[in-house]
Amino acid sequence: MTDKGKSLWDMAEESEGKQELMDEEVKKVYSAMGEITSGLRNEVGKVVVGQQDVLEQILIAVCCGSHALLEGFPGLGKTLMVRTLADVMDLSFKRVQCTPDIMPSDITGTYIIVEDDAGRKSFHFERGPIFSNVVLADEINRATPKAQSALLESMQEKQVTVGNSTYKLDPPFFVLATQNPIEMEGTYPLPEAQLDRFLVKILVDYPKREEEGEIINLYASEKQPSVQKVLTKKHLLVLQDLTRKMPMSEDLKEKVLDIVTNTRPGKNKFAKKYLDYGASPRAAIGLVLAAKARALISGRNYVNKQDVKFMAYPILRHRLILNFESERKGISADEVIEEILHEVG
Image (cartoon, rainbow, N blue to C red; front, side, top):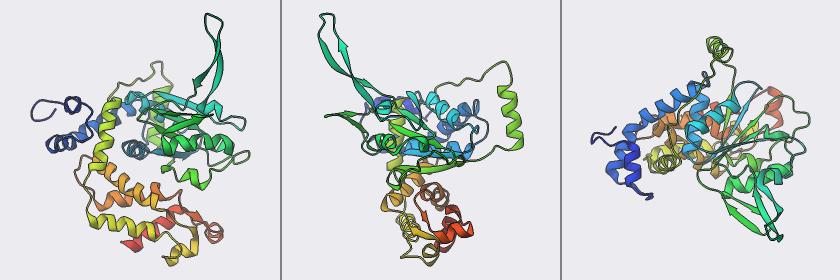
């Protein structure tokens, strides 16, 4: 509750969908973010044990209105986390299980012939799973390039074109994709153009021993966990608007430019040694937005240096093209990012 007894959501309703909230209301929303984030973490934590960094980075992508790629071994709860987060935020959810025989129409939808009571036949567009707020593309690297391309327009343009017709996707819209770092046989690595559409690449690791014990107790018992809704679509759109309103100093924006430009081989000796290609301007935009979102969900009304450094890894790791030298020495993208962050200071 705010100091006038009105909740954040009361203020959002009073704004009647206006794009800009009054300065006084914005300050109150900032002060309520700690409570909001805590509620999200608590509800998701009822179903998913641990993985707090993963949850935070997904929330950041959601606040930025962008997409996330989750990479981890099978059975680590990637799908469960995405589905639970959609339930907590009261968003429609569809899952696409990617396989080598999946067709673009299995994602976007297709035209079918329908017959009315008078016997007249006509074409009707049957919408596919892409027409949801949250679309989980499970094991996206198992889909063929043709099927992967069906996601590309929706991710960038927030629309779907089928035949001669274009259909707008209802906001908010997110593609959260998973891929398995092992079992590379029969897979189709995502092209760089599509990888660049994902704001973040999130690495999902094994849980700690004590967390794994909690998981066993939680899912080997008779009672299954359930969650309550914390947000609505309208509230989430307000948060996305607030993310872009978050103030950020010019010095930190210069820091972002230093980090991104130093990933390019022509600008940095270390990058030249281990990279073929560096990050694009889209990475700089993404890093600024992600740093703002991290500050927002942390309950702060300013962005600090740690926000930029923390988000540099998930923002850049899938945008750096490693060369033969880095593969020969076993140098990872995260190690390159760490060195560049050290040089930039």
